[in-house]
Length: 160
Image (cartoon, rainbow, N blue to C red; front, side, top):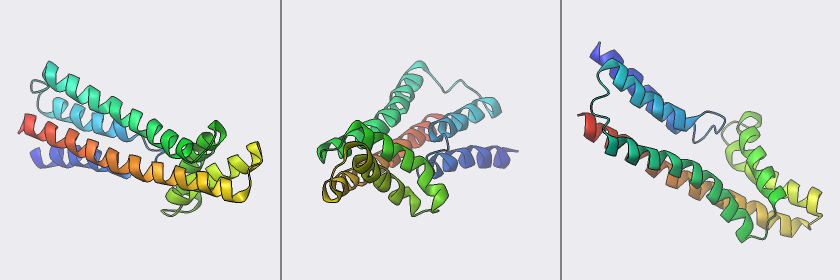
């Protein structure tokens, strides 16, 4: 049964990484599920107060990185709140319309279209905002990969 338990825990962690590329999936919840599965299958004893506090801070940082990276990328290139919303909608819809490539195309197009439609910006200005959105998303994803790896490594260090 140990093997099955660890497969389920590992699968939940793997789904957390898949969620980085399909943002509609609740990646943070899959990480939490892995921790909860360990507690149910084995014991919650290793989850001390310091462990919970550190993991909670890292969980919160995943949400903050999502928001701040997109905001920073769009604002740095002169974008508006409409571009941020367009980018977010594009991020959620893009991977389903164009599998894999939609992950990059969606936020870019969402930001560009929002700037053109809502703020009547020229295409070159809107394009620049779209690039900012794309760079913010890529940077945020890279940071989230590292944060999730830290969370999993810390979990493994505590339980093994």
